[in-house]
Image 1 (tube, one colour):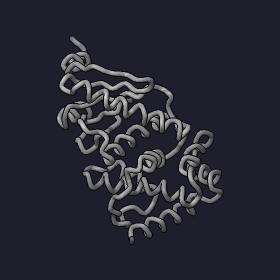
Image 2 (cartoon, rainbow, N blue to C red; image 1 turned 90 degrees about the vertical axis):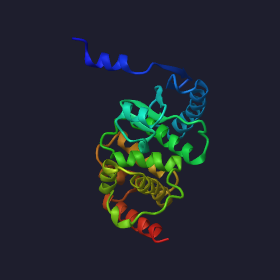
Image 3 (cartoon, helix red, strand yellow; image 1 turned 60 degrees about the horizontal axis):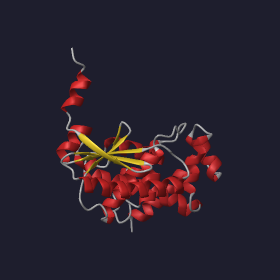
Image 4 (spheres, rainbow, N blue to C red; image 1 turned 90 degrees about the horizontal axis):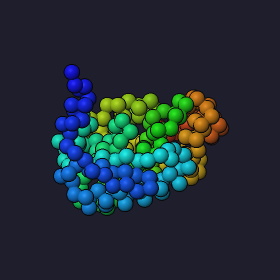
Length: 237
């Protein structure tokens, strides 16, 4: 009997690819080669910029798979197109478009690239929401978003729950607002670079409480209280 995985692979549309120093972009034949090269140029620049700035993360190759449309994206990822760009099994899946320099879209791509730079790291207990806060904050995707009701997120643990339950554009917008402003709060409270300073603590520690204590010399509960007050303030503006 022919292996099912082999059958599925043979049934997939053929792809071509273009590569730079750090990025490989794969495209189906119904996505123009010039579009793939445009993505390659932008993503390579983003990769180098954020890898150097964050001083942490992968040093391998960034794999990107362009999808022709939302149906192609759904077939390859099993997810709705609202989640594009999306990481799955070490590849960033993106629905291809001709204009990739529009600011809002550029921020979405940057968020995906930063996640790719950060997420392969073994963080020894760093919560996923903290890693994604770096991506949302550094990419700027949270800027200009409408503040959601504060009551929907009261604790750090709520961020993790939100990440798992997001299922609509509004959910994603609210999540990015919270994650990005979490990074902004840390930098405003403890100085520029504080979000990454906290993340770097997980190179040697295995728990959130200890990392917060080492980074800021306060307890995790004190950090959470200040963050709650900050969210209340910006939600009321």
